[in-house]
Length: 377
Image (cartoon, rainbow, N blue to C red; front, side, top):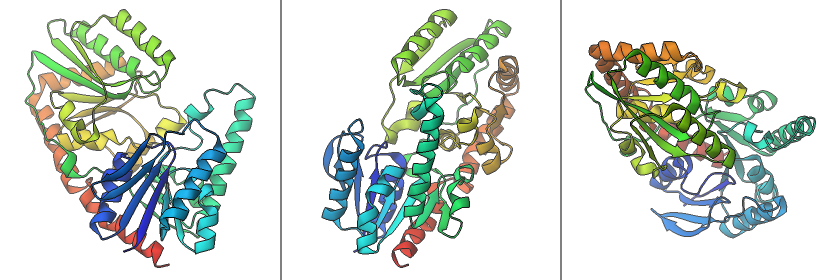
């Protein structure tokens, strides 16, 4: 039975992509699978997948590398799948000594804006260059690449074009999707925001659009559902100031839910939003949540991101917008209210496209075959 080891620094051991999709797919195909994360403490076996996880994300680089090396030596995998550059660098000696494959699964920008946020200019420039060189070094050490989306192929796919690579998008397994198509009530509407609450992720853009809506339709009962939390103290202060500024009458804020019940948590929503800022990092991303909204049958209003357009083209179940155009966004909501048949069409289109184009079952074997071929290289 071939052994596969997942190494990740910043993702949890029960990350939806790593644990619920990739690891389970390999397990179902006869692989012995282990996940090592540095995000949270846990040791044990979940659904026949071995977990060895440590809460040492804030510890030194050397301690993190040493932890990964020990796990590699103890588990003796035939292939290692890394989610960050540090994991690829840490497994270098094991990969070379045992002549095994190392797949770098590129799902995040590196360096990300959050990584550079704490540095001041001009130190920020130096750190960006340093982190970029680490990324290239990880690409050099890796034998294969998996990219979560086409827009994240740069720079590794271009510097190392000779290495085998595939695109494995963030499509959800239908097993974790709760369908909840609604019939729009012209008197009451529920608008939903999920994920990290911050300026970058568009919470103020969301509130601006709703403010415009209530000014245009004062008789409409607007319910606001927020599922998420702030990550930084500055975000908490910022969010509190927005709540005071807008003083919405009907707003519910729920903590982030477990992955398995994520779509059930926003079942009451009529329209789901993601109005994140269009900066370089966000613009080249393909937000995972989009596919969960689709599977649940929710029309969406999303920032007009290059990552979405390049992967999906024009949406048949919602609108791509300038997140700062609150007036235009509010008109789109009103258009749904006044044209319930359009709302229903978009809800059905979302579910239909999820089932036909954007679910894990369609790409699962592609991923498993790539891992098998990497072992058999």
